[in-house]
Amino acid sequence: MDADQRVRKLAYRVTKALETELLDLVLSGDIGSFGKLCDRYYNSIAAIAYSVLTDHHLAEDAAQETFLRALKNLKKLKSKEKFGPWLAQICRNVAKDMVKKKLRGIDTENVLPLADVGNNEQENQAVKQAIGRLSLSERELIVLRYYNNMSHEQMSSVLGLSKGAINNRLVRSRKKIAKHLKNNGFAEIEL
Amino acid sequence: MNQENNKKSLGELISRAVGRENLKFDFDKWKSIHEKEIRICKSQMSDEQTSRSVWAFNIWRIIMRSPVTKIAAAVIILVIIGLHQFSNSINGTSVVWADVAERLEKVSSYTAKADRALTETGQEEPFFECEIKRYFSPNHGSIEKSYVDGELTMLAYCSISEKKAIVVFPQNKMYWRFDLNEELLSVVKYINPANKEGIMKLFGSERCTRLGSRVIDGVRTEGFEVKDVKLFSQLPRYLLHPEDINIRVWVNEETLLPERIEGEGFVGKGLLTGFKEFRYKEVMHSIEYDVEIDESIFDPNIPDDYKLIDPANMAEKAELGLVSILPFNVAMIAYEHFKKRRNGIDNT
Image (cartoon, rainbow over the protein chains, first blue to last red):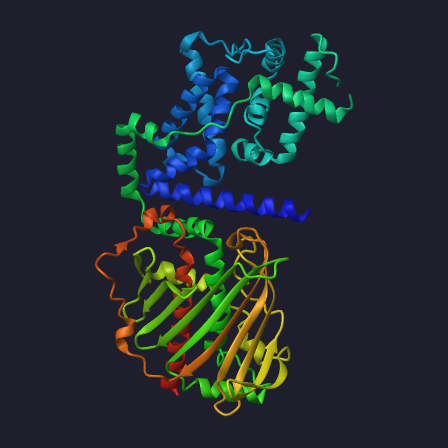
């Protein structure tokens, strides 16, 4: 492990310690500290919601609903170290609830009718199709990674998985996507 | 296309398909939308928790905000511990140190000045320098005044009898007042570097080397040095990572009291240093013992237009700096030491 890795590891530990302190503050009635936690997790929670809802606006709505449910149930959180994964699970439930209610006719089994239209729309649609064929957990992982270039540390924090496990699953998922793209005429994508 | 390029291009494709700009959570808006639910949650939580965690977190987040000032203040412990712990662990291997210890038993107060400098690794010029004036009286407490470029930037008061502490930031016209309660004392003890490897134990040990004689401000002194002192051993290394700490004490040959104390060393990457490496140097000088200190100096006498800092909002107050607390740690360590000594004397 080189110096930078050690520093990153230390920084991660410090971050987790800070998070625990933030949670203590929230539990003592400091709601402003909850805002800091929301800031910290907003992107990852929105990404998880997006992997289910496939709509950016709905994903943000789901993230905000997730935070409200989390705040209401914070006292039930058994381990503060697992706040991220706990939040992620609430988010999955929120997103699934939204799907059940068929908000705006979302169908999560089909792939992503996003608003990103441009020259590469065909490519985008193909990639979205490929992602849509992944299992929910694989899809979640891929979206988390590429939603806004999330680091393995951040993913580890919200998923509660080791970085090694995340890396292995990402490799596997990417291979599946590449294979799908290749089968659909993207010859330059090689396995 | 090789595999690396393939991975990259696949990543770009996926990012383009599902990626987004970094989202910013609008907490105020969210709070206003869910005002009622949040109010209920807040009231429930407030009823159940004490402010203990608030205190603890304030420490953390302020440390995060002002690494430079914090490490600067933390370093003070190096020197002052050297002054006050002399008599604690002398093991008798050095006649001189036994004499010094005996002499220090009789010291009741002191004033001193100190110069502190921090220099980033690879640089020649310090990026932080300050001058310090210290006053200590076991009956009244301690004061530390910090000056940067001649401007008074901080006064740290500690009232031992009342167990209260006040930190004043004249440039900001702000002050911070708090009790030196058990929680703070636990922090003090946690940070106390003299828990296991007190400096005096080192100076009374075989590791202590003589530096010979030197005239300081016309006073003939005998120098002693201990290298690679292990301080802050109780502190996690990700917080503070001091290495190669050398401490030199120059003892007045006539009075057998420290005339000058020098501490220097390397501080590796850690939270308190903002994950930077630098060297520090602190020289405590102009030490006067058993001086009469005007009692009024221990009265903070805070002007009416100074604003009391709300600890809950401390993090938003920018660079005021928690480590201003640390001088109180030092004072409390000194206080405990003096108390112990007095009790010891009383018992004999």
